[in-house]
Image (cartoon, rainbow, N blue to C red; front, side, top):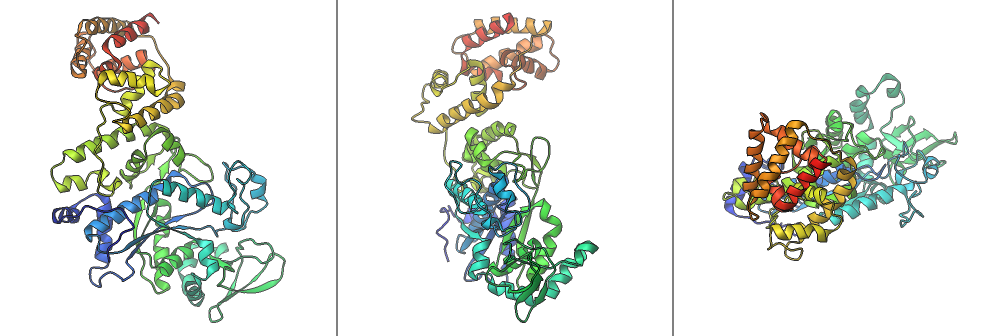
Length: 540
């Protein structure tokens, strides 16, 4: 059964052979699924991939990363199977979870405080009337935000709401089975709990008819009748069926039940789930289903090394990244070293942008399929990376903005056109896009942190000499020739570590600690302007 929902793949015998041998992590994960069905063949309905989302706060960039990475595994699997097996990606939102705490980064917090304990899909939308369209509830608002972003990236997925699945009957069979297997689930869960919690723990959480809250109370489960009996918030003892949205499962049993109900074949999640992974698997098997294949990734950290959190709102949001860099650079950040904890802060953006274009150039220079499949851009673009000419790296554009104090694209394009007469905003829209990003990034992050310093005597002498030597060079000297002269000046003036010489140039001339190749920058900025910048800095 061929899949047509995802972007078309280029498939050849050589490419498939290379995929089977590739050490790129998406292919390693995809081969787990191939092996899963090696003996019995694939089910008629195909292979199901799932990602989970807890809408207790605004979706953050880590949520996007989970969908992006899963999509990379899907495309690897499609190539391994020559796109002859149907695949689905379900993005599941646990919007029936009870709201336990108030996020710091949302308005109208009194509205949320008044609804603590209720399912997220039944908590009023605090953004309604704040310049946004109301979505009916806090959970649905966050669901809409996530879907809008995933749609913007062009992901192929099916969105699923826990509230819909619990209330519409889609989970009824699985919930009835869980009630019958209540003792088995307890046998799995109780040894993992403290003594006090073991005494009151129930896998089932009734939704109070009196208060509308998700109740963490002892329950008597009747597996034959498919009911739970409990003390409600109003003090009365009540009995409810486990079906029809009257209850939800605790989050660990819910994981296993969901896998069993949907027939999930693959799901990845963060390292914070690692210790519970075996519990999810055992509960899934207790309900008569096969546990999915897993991939556990490391968590993202904020600038202080703390885990990013929806409730805290630390780290970078998806919209913030896209205000300063291309979507492809974000996908590259997600692809690289998923099992290594990484700082997710604004200072990682410029490097990610330039590395993307470096990988793209390397992809088109590669002459063998193995090298291409190990290149991140194959996975970012589902096997069809574009051909782009990027004559000026992003880091260079940032320094050009810094040196020229440009605040508009036209000024920057004036420099670029002198450097490369063939480049225009019309024939290189991607470069024009980067120009806009560079201006925004410089304005918000580089300019406020600029700190010029005076040169030492040794540095002053070297910079005076550099200005004179550059001034004497031909006007059409290219970046390599200019870079050679910069090196020579550093050596002639006794800089044993040339890195210190270049750092001095950046600190004295640009007010920052790092920069691109100085010769290439001088060629782009213009040799005579560079000489004037050096002399003005020395006078300053």
